Image (tube, rainbow, N blue to C red; front, side, top):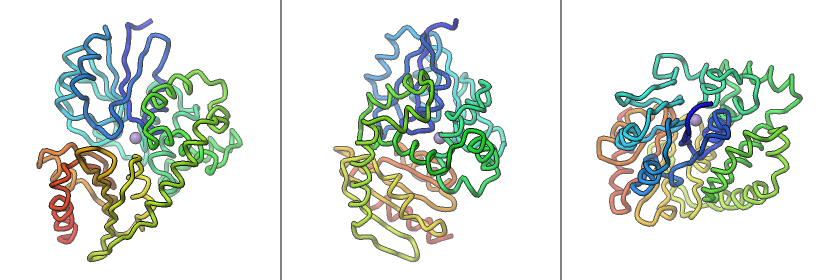
Length: 317
Ligand SMILES: [Mn+2]
């Protein structure tokens, strides 16, 4: 048996499923404050007092400062598929930063599943369905998923519904339930059934669907082919809204200034967001993402200027 272990994971389906495959009775797990891609001072202090002998960071590109603070507490291992800068002294299992294609490693769940020999578990696949949704059908990984679904008599629609049910917990802002989900999924005899029959998650999901519908009906602007949508929601639905608004050709920028008390969330979806992430990080914002996605947290008073800078970069394409 290993020493006492902490898993810090993303709050979405990919993060939860990845963590569930690494979870056991000598493990604790936590997600940061939902919406934060860093650890707050009180979270670090709690971790310091936890007596952990190892720390795993899963499906989460935490900022350098948080990673160094963790490395001061115990040896840190990262399982991820996001493009991040390595922090010295930390052990990375991330095929994508080693040059492998995201088409072969579409999710952290697949990275974890293949390193622990759980490629046949639904947990390995759910993260990929969560992170890619319909777009997964267009990459070569989909063949693997098809084989899995056929063998287990599951449809893509059912997998997609499972993702929505798991994600309903973070979207509704229930951090404790996000954290409990890791143990629940790790211990469930039939993971698929457990998810689909979860009454609480179903109710959450209904609430969220209504809220997303409201947000989508809010006014949207089109400037030089770029869609701009400014929503007002106390739920963390910005990425779901951006996905729905995106036409898969141009760019969409979504903002929500009602989720955090002091800051706005700004979210971009489009062909290539890497230079936008670089720009946001360069300005000192907490920001991150992947090739098609940028998420940033900016003070309310700087939101308009930040959105203008994004527009300037996109217009130069
Ligand atoms: Mn992921």
